[in-house]
Image (cartoon, rainbow, N blue to C red):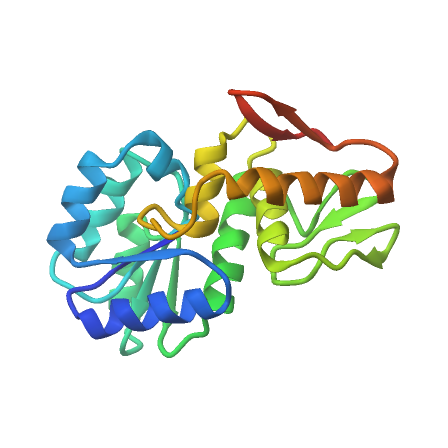
Length: 222
């Protein structure tokens, strides 16, 4: 899930709509709404955030420090006008990347994943030898051959690979894929996605690279 912060509803609504078209869940908030959400959200909700997008608003340089007390997810600033001085100030404040609008959400996702890989000392696609998982919209590959996956299954696999050092719960996966305020879909849908994904990977690899423990969650062990 990506969180977009901007005082202009037209900006947040536009990006939320764009993320949705690409199959990513997102949440648009004003500055004050964001502060309240950040301080009251559960660990499950915060853990589902894959990136924070900060538009232009007053006191923006103070937000990275506020976010870092709750999350290590990438923070990207969205700029209306290119300004060297402002860009340098944002980097100094703790922003991970600065992007000038207009920018496609797939580029935002790619930049966010690039920041995540740098932080986790990972370069390029994740791999376990035979399986390669990309973070730029491409399907994973097994032995160099693409393994076509439905969009949500691919996003689940990418999320598990990113978090392979820890076990993630069904709720965290649901919040990441469907968003924290989605009441139209039951959380149990993740079990169906996961069953299909594990079966496809097992058929191609001959082993189960996703460990599932009831009531505890899932972990990529490839």
